[in-house]
Length: 278
Image 1 (cartoon, one colour):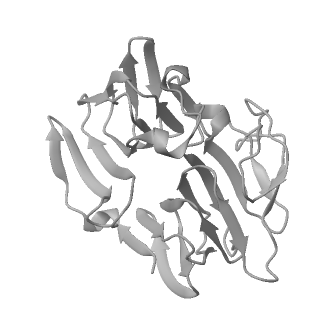
Image 2: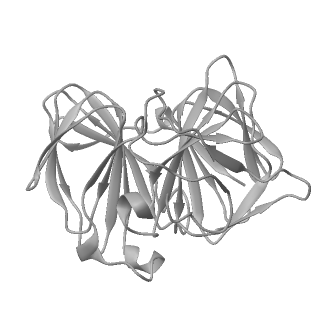
Image 3: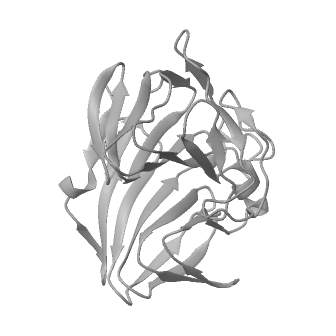
C-alpha cells in the first residue's frame, strides 16, 4: 500500500544554527528506499553548508522565502520558482535572505542507476521551473513541466517533473516497473488512489508508491493541485490498465506565465524512456 505522511506530523530536528530538518523519506519510513528527502527550514540570515560526495547526487527545491547559493563559481539568487541540481563533489553555502524552506534530496551511489554516469561531466544547474516549457495533456486540462532530466542534469539516474491538476482532473490508472516513485504536494488537495483504494492528500504530503503499485490522482477543491514527482532511476516502464488512455503530452510553446520558454520540447507519450530532447 502507498505510504503517505504530511510534513506537519513530523517533528523538527535542529541541524545547525537557524536550520531545522524534517526527515520525510528515510529507510525507517520506507524499507529499502535508496533516496533521502528532507524538508529544511532556515531562519532569516541562517547559513547551511552543502557538501556532496563524489559518488552522490543531490538536489533541492525552494518552497518558501529567498536565499543565495554561494559557491566557487559565483552566487545564485534563489526564490520559490527554483530547483537546483547539485553535482558530485559540490561544495557551497546556502544563505537565507529571508525565512526560507526547501525540499532537499540525496541519491547516494548514483552510478548504480546510470551506466553512463560521469561525475566529471556534471555541473551545477539552477532551474527556474516557471520558465521551462509547459506541456498540455491531450486528454484533459493537466499540465507537465520537466525539472530534473538528462538534458537539465546530465544523468539518467533520476527524473523529476511538476504536474498541475486543475480542479476535477485526474490521470489514468497505471503502474511503474523498474523505479522508485514518490511525489510531494506543493499546493491544493485531492485523492490519491493506490491499487484502487482512495487516500486523501493535501499540501505538504509525501506520497510513496511501491513498484508495480497501481495508482492515479484526482484533484479536488477550488484551486489547482500541484505536485513534484521523482523517479529513481530516471528510466523505467509505465504500464496502463487495460482500456485506459495513455498520457500524451503536447508542447504549448510557452512557459507557465505565458512567455516563450527557455527551451523547446517535442510532444510525446508517457512510456519507457525519457525523450532525448527533455
